[in-house]
Image (tube, rainbow, N blue to C red; front, side):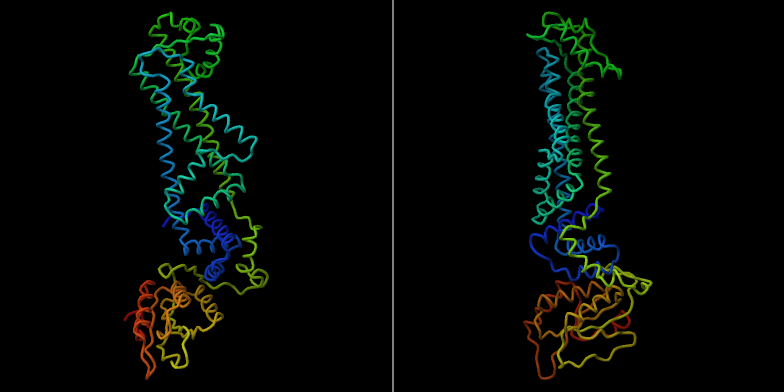
Length: 459
């Protein structure tokens, strides 16, 4: 199962809140009990409750599927960005059979990138919330690749959670700028390969602009590359670069260096800096994420997770060991053996003779008795628990849910299916239903009391 980070905990909590908001309250009695037993402030109890419900209802597993789909979607978009960058380089230079217009080549390499970069920056500055098309495509791909119907609830919850702290802009910004950075690096790499393996001639031409204007534009674009050591064409080289003048080897090398330097300075560097900035803002904002306890879905949980008597009263000192139990396999420091019965009638004398050290938890025949025992077991789990059932009753959903909940509060659990009272017989089909249900719960069962196991832990 996916290891959860603090962001994942918040994400699952928000998903459970949205689910309850649209579909009504969930059956959360066990989750509330475990959250109260775990302790902590209200926010931590709400998250504990949500994690229990998410694990029970498959949302945690769906989150793992969604994350796998999201990673695969990023890889697919990265491959697309690399291919697109390579395509830009091939389109700008061609096959070397014809001379290359330097400004047309530079515009082909940088034009779309700079236009979209300007659009992203203006949207970030003036629109407040910016949802880039690449971000929406990534979310759509993540959901499709997750291949889990329950994962459809995760994306809306993530967006709502991030929008409250305006973090979605930085998450999308990291993705968008990162993908464009890959595209620009791919274009530079292919540009270097083509310039190394092909002989290109460069020229400039314009109907409206004269040589002076072209020289001025070229020098302006060359200022930054020149500052970090890239070679740039001289004025004489620029003026000589027309169709009517033969390109010397030095002129070709200078134009090639100018083109690569412009790509690095105006294509790669801005995207790299913006990606790092968005990533920094994302990490800062992520560390400050928390639950908005004023939301109706969380506010109404306060009394259930932090009862007034617990919040305001003076409690006894906590016992030396409080155990947070989610499953029998994870119970630590449990102790003692316990016998409990579920809805027995007076035809079965109760309790039977018990070995020394085994405690009788009585007969659970009301909601109050069940809750009382569950609260006790959540604080002091049993090492061995024997649950007694009357197989003359049908194994209904409520009884099986209670058996499963009790089993999660003990290190080891067995079920004792009582024999029929004298003069009566068990229904074979109903007994088979019990066996089938207990096998699904993966609980061992027997038709005679395993008192030796209950006392010693050995049969």
